Length: 116
Image 1 (cartoon, rainbow, N blue to C red):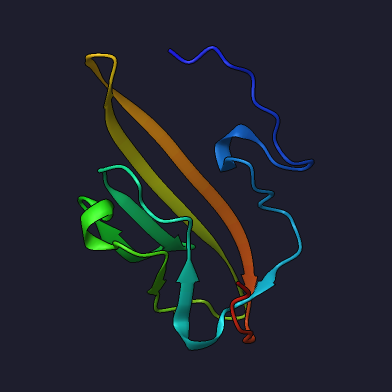
Image 2 (cartoon, rainbow, N blue to C red):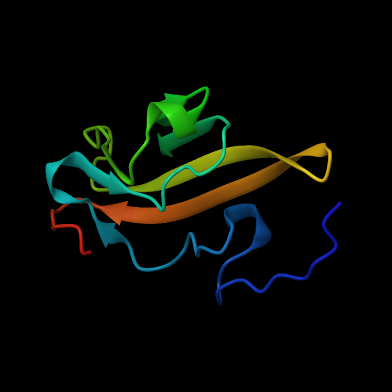
């Protein structure tokens, strides 16, 4: 077990990673774009818009090799919450270790370009 202490953003909680699910809704990206830091470990991932799964993979390290991919945002009417989950697994010190990554991002209809 990892006994480290982590600080989260004000308004965030441990259920949503370092993100604040009640933060200012962000515009839906133009071109159905989504960007992450990339999947550096093997393991499954999912992206949900409220109750609709819009992206999934059994091994996202292989299925999504880059940082940019597309998501169908059409189920987001008005406002919704994007929920991103990734269970990264790696072999370290002769044992397998799971790393749980997650983010909850409030979205609103509109468009913008991704910033680099």
